[in-house]
Image 1: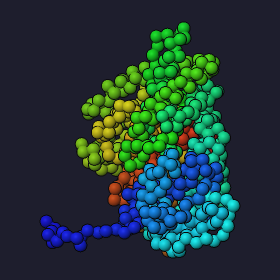
Image 2: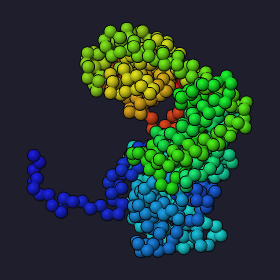
Image 3: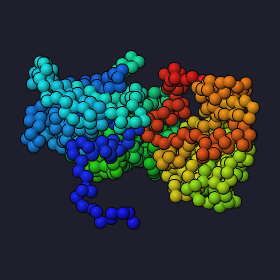
Image 4: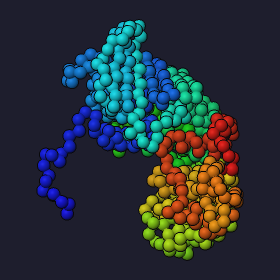
Length: 635
């Protein structure tokens, strides 16, 4: 029992004033204080500007990253009110930046819909910043106020000039004592966010300028999510050249949907509510699926060759690219991440709005309709073949010792929470790994050659592939809709390949398989990348390993500065003996691993589609854009 157990009184109750609670527990408000939490500060301020656009009062938003790693966001909206708030007796501007749960998002007369849910945005940014400056153009005047050290008022609101325009300019710098591990903003992350917002808000102009390296991008899309669909399907062979599009309102739910089929095998469905990406779908996606299946079945019932045939969602989803965006006055989400929408009226609205319009589209475009139906028919045949192949794989992979793949050197432990599975490239490296491992909890599965690229093949072919079958059997959780993480045989699944181009290719092929067939392994953080060394440096009995060129140079100039050393460059795992592989790459006390976890579901899906699919042009663009960051092609 703890000491002084009876001294539980008012002195033990801590009262956090103002924004202290945010600084004390920032994770409760922005999720975490890593790279995602840092950028969440931008999204909170940006959401306020976008809400002005949703309300029809703003059509331009500008974001500026200064060379001091500050963020400036400006818009041409109405400008934050500066009059005295009746409840706080402070100006509305000061109230918004210093009082939690203060904002116009709770008042439907101010914002019919908004992206923010809790009304804590501006105050949380203030709480977690070194300083915040607000410059407001309103009432033909320019107002200014500054806060510092997590929300302390530096100045009262001041009139500093005159203006014929309206709008808000917010400048802030994150507090490095809060964001200890990361303080630099990532241009690409912000770029992707504003591009997505431009697609979702037809006609809204957004730009981003980075003073640190003079990078500049701007986005505005007159066709909104139709342009979004065209970009996603850029370089892919389309089934229907005409992009289906509908925008309508039903019972105060604004529904906007765009659809186009392509020749690929996976579906790409992106759903949003009030500009928030709903990564786990929800009721609006349910309404979308019901409407698509119902309308396609109704249409085929009128066709001679297809009478009596009934499609399921699995039949019609292959090759579909869709964006489902709704605006809702009172969105309800499951969980804190806003990942899944729960409003039943959203399901009804999407189902009805999409159903009527999609039916009209098929009737008005019979050539496109015929191609879509033929695609669905092929998908249905493939689904049945895949089901047979999956059942064959499932029968072969029952969880007993006799059905595990022959190339698997299993561990002794049956405790899945402590066990690890290494997926190793090649028999040579597999042999070293088997001899060097700790047999109690480390299992080795040797893979022959490059794994199948599942992004380019139908499911049936994937399930027939021997390497894929071995992985499915070893991991034990099943695939896709049948996945069950309670059957996971190893807590850590570690991809261990050579530190060269071929090894990197095998890693991405395996990650593509996990993302498309066992996505939950990534979302729950069970997949890792091993980091083998590039060099061994030794002088006499003294030796060390280097995992990068910079690390090697440091060893040469420091630990081995006065030695006659030799350097060995490892071109592959097979060049290391069992002891070396253990002490550098497999020993939990000394190894370094990268944990793969899906932080941005939308970006992850887009990346796998563009880099591993058929779109050569998108792959070239990616290489050209990122070539500047490559230092050593063999790493």
